[in-house]
Length: 362
Length: 221
Image 1 (cartoon, chains in turn green, orange):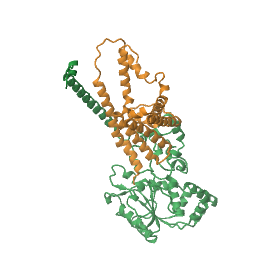
Image 2 (image 1 turned 45 degrees about the vertical axis):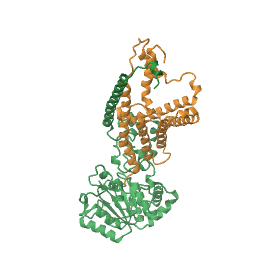
Image 3 (image 1 turned 120 degrees about the vertical axis):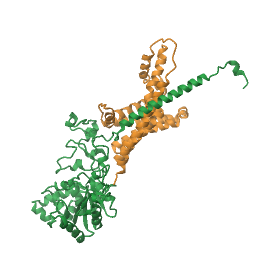
């Protein structure tokens, strides 16, 4: 990638004032769940931090994550943060191709060994190396090579974090996430299909300013994945009142009632979608009238169907239930008939006893 | 990387539910078929009144306590009512529960808000503890209590408590608590046909038989 100017130069270039920059730093502090008093420190760190080399590897993916981060379009400050790093390798965004592109990756690795940040989007196929290759190098090999010299790894998107859609049953390529393979490097998972742009840039900003953020048990930054969407959803009052949309075009849907019954996974999905939202805070899926798919959670594709409510059984239970009822009738009838037969038998074997018999010595 | 809580939730919603459903539905039908096929001895005496209508009437009238018994055992009666009504509201009028019936049978009815659901749940739990207290403190009742009674009490308590915790996110991960709630219901389903819990279905038959027998003789039941 072409060498980028420093952040201060970019700010001037995009006509962003110092006040605007400070406002953004305060916003970042808020997004990262830091005290507002940390804003000047963030500003100082961003202005003075050396631009780390970033190598972005794309494996089994749809480029949605890159699309998402590039939708934080110029002249927004997210874009500036994105430019505060030296993006030395990225298939979609780099001008070079073929051998020249691979040479850029190798050069960046050599020049910044042990210091660069590795960003990965897409899952890695383990069944056959040939399922996904770049310049004749398998995804697995390229990940191992590049991760060896990385200071930290950011797994962007649910595919890189947890295997994502390629990992969905029956997982034909044996797809896994980065943390399944790399065990000796700090890994930050930023799941989402795709992740919210400001979450990605926020994580990069945290890496630049304060290092690795606090992570949950799934390796996700707690600042962005600490609370469920349900808890912060603007439709939550309707859930509490027992008002639900029953279909996508009914009265409840038009009135903006809760989408739980349409399969919303908000109660079990941790993300800041409901507060940070998308497209510069315009909206998020639930606001657009569609239930949450739960895309920041592992195996979201296989978690019981997008349009089945969380409380509803996920399997094909009807046939099983009918079979159980049939078996119950059959066993119950046989059992009752056996009881009747034994009752009849007992009645037949019954011997009349009178008072004299009772007085006989036994 | 897997989320073990999600894996547990999915097991509860799929394999666990299927196992519970087989035992629950199969067990109930088995026991009811037994009751119906065994039938009753034919009564050769001429009927003095309509046994059928008295039987149907008794199904409902037995839900009302006889005069004086509430005073005699207030905790048992009032606790029993509070528990049953509370459990009934929480189970049948909470929207996520109605969604199960909609998916299963295509039936739908309006849900009520969380205030009513949670109040009902809390009252049902308190009533269960009150019933347990009288069971433990009254020497006669204590002597009559079997392991089955304590088991049924615990199995009735768990779905109420885990459901309350899951909805209010009081402790633990919400996904884990939802999984535990569903699993606790599945335990209840498994025990249902083979314990006193079966009275939720068999009470109709028992009351009908009692009412019909007395009614045929021309007596009130």
